[in-house]
Length: 435
Image (cartoon, rainbow, N blue to C red; front, side, top):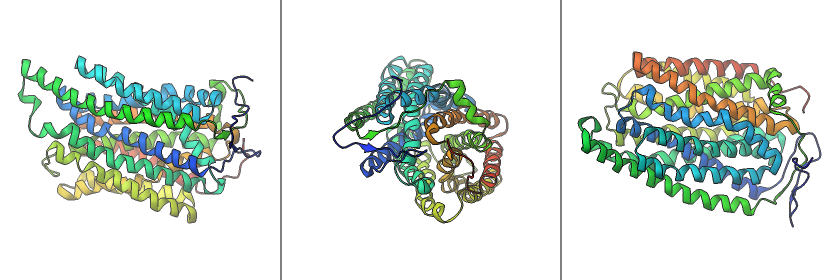
């Protein structure tokens, strides 16, 4: 059919394997994929800095501030399946360009959001930005699995996610310097009337400038990826409807894996969203907003280190067992963070990043085993499951408003219990039929 990809030709294309699962050998494309993981990981982690900023500027409760994550991750619910359809129609690299251009547009929308000075306008900009990230993730996750031998897909995706963590380590630190610095000098709660309006306008402009710089960088990356769009020869993907794509959820391994993606992303985002405010608590570290923001990279840096280590461990230990062990460790750390005080509580929460490290890529690859040429559909469904990042943080924020931040950790702890169960379920190699 015309809407399918019959071939993408060039002077030196990378051919697809003719077997059930597509496989490409393109080291240069792996470099591009690593750059994409770095970029969308870093931009997503900026939410952890933007949340305390907007919470202070607009005097929001924890639940209201979590609407930042809800607006952002709602895009995964609404855009993932259309994103998979774009991949099927135009191919992986062209679809990546569409995603990058959409991300650029979302960053540029921060400029009018700053001019209007409305919380809702920032939420709209975040939704558009996340829509682009969603399309890029629908492309990147299955493609990095195909850029090499199937036997090392778990390790390769985890290694790629390490570059995602590199972005999440660097971006929050820079973002805290650019975005949170003034909150240490001014308390918006002490301002009113014209003074508060002027402060909101000035500080909103700081946020807008940060994202305008990101827009310029994204435009350059989009141009580079577009220039490489002929590098793959892709086998024709079967034409399927959205309803047909969701029938993959009837497969126990894939269905359980999709639920685990929902739980993992929701829990990870919920924890990352409250780190700054948690470290500012008098009975934890009592830091100001900027100092607390500068410690967020320790959380994401742990994830980066864990992913490089995990890329090796997943070659020698069954992925399901590694996943179960990591989930059990996080539950223990959340228990300490929720019951201890001072530096013990703070370091327990920050250490969670180390064990989060292998979870997303391991869950994704375990759930995707056996999908064959329906991999793009599976990627779309799994990206829909990322909507957990819109729902679990809201529940955590509501629990924090009612019972305090430490008590609210019971919500992500319950999510990790589900992930532990999936790890035990998927500890044996997949033995079903592909496709």
